[in-house]
Length: 588
Ligand SMILES: [Zn+2]
Ligand SMILES: [Zn+2]
Image (cartoon, rainbow, N blue to C red):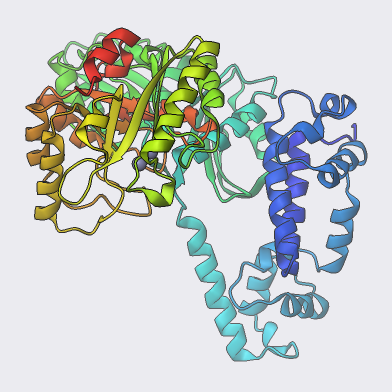
């Protein structure tokens, strides 16, 4: 066996260094963060790490400096690192795992190691249950008891999952898939679960793979170096916890079971159960364990018990007499009934439909990149137009533009326009003020190509006042797009209180549209409100709310959220070509 480490093993070593530096504390914490970033950067390197090293490309990867590059080189060539070896020598074995137990300092862990040879949480549990810990100097019966309680808490915490935001879950899923694909056995692999449904947050990252020998794929994943804990394991599945705290579940099946496995693992649970019931009413049995669709033995018409062929997931729904239901819709929020009546939207919006990048900030307000940078990035993504919508003066904390700066920005947009093919549209993200008026006088607002109107403060205003404020804003004569509608930040700030339906009623008869915000921390508005708005024939834009070039990747999350709200292509204004879009959103 070659001792050269691959990028995954190198990342695992860097993560170990980071954890040990964290334990040393003090200024080492900053170094710890650098190694953590480095570990992620290494996994993201395309292709073989050996080649990247021989071509001296490592330090050009963001997050990898000279010091880190030299450790990576050492790890790759020798299988070990001088920094890691030195750190390991400073601590007893098992220190990282043991330090997670409440009340165990590093010095206490050292004492336990010297006295009883404890080097894991399991060792500690055994020693404490058999009353050995109380005899170690500095411990005693009371400490022993509280350690046992702390171990129980620790086990419970492991089961309590941390929920990931979409972009985080996606990054980790991609790393794991890249690794699984290095197995010769795997034929196909797909994301499933909440991530495939584009849900707001993801608990367990679920994956489905198929192979002639599924057990080999499971075994392969279990060798993934970033795994810190295996929670569950069979011949066809496993659930593991990764160093960053994410939980990954893999189901591995035979190729002819792939479609049904994907259906079951994608969920949601209530959707799956309801579809199983429908199969039952049709005299069929949709079996989760056997991954088969069979004619129910009790049904009279049953001539044989031979399973029906379901080669792909798309074939399942028609076999049960309904339209195919896209993953983003599978929440049991009416999609099954609609699919049975063939009333699901037939042209759900897709990423490819989007022609314009909407809601982008530049260095003129709080964005990281220049107008030219943003223009080129959007052009590289195949966009026909880009709306530049920096903040208005009231958002002074975000560098909102006063009139003189706005004038300068327009001149610069004109200059950049000379150099790029993509059409640049002059816009603003205008604050909605407390009385429902918009920032900038009407005379100025009318000169923009596009106006986004957003609430950026007063989130605690009472619901009646907020509703009134929004209604006044939506009734303003200029056409405006309601930006990040309810101001929520997922897992951080709830949507503000207001009568959403009353506001939607007003939008339906005013010059306004609504934004589906693709920022994975926002994903505003929620699917149920999108569906309420659809009933009123309100139009939407899908935006990125980008404060950097990289954030243009938010587009896919916005599209997923729009699909969760059942939006069709014809309801999305930035699926229009540039001229029609301009006409549709023209403020005056
Ligand atoms: Zn905003
Ligand atoms: Zn914004």
